[in-house]
Length: 83
Image (cartoon, rainbow, N blue to C red):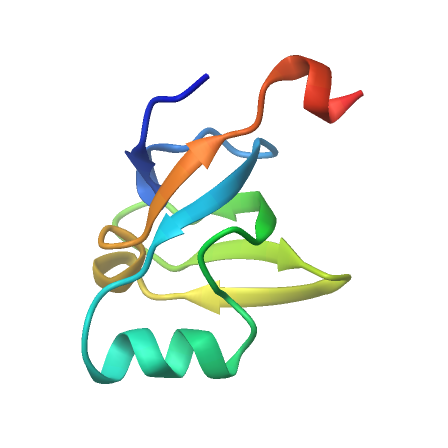
């Protein structure tokens, strides 16, 4: 699947590759936590009512604010890649 969606739109427990991060300070902070374009992540869950999004990256869980996660573009991993 080559469709890009925001991290917020990705279903819980789905895996994806990061396509792009927001520009500026928030993007640099995400890179400092290991989030970079091309990295594979799994969205653990998104809290309701615009709460934080939790992702799993390299065995760690990272919580990202709803507004910033809306600016993270991801490409969902295909079903074959998940097996």
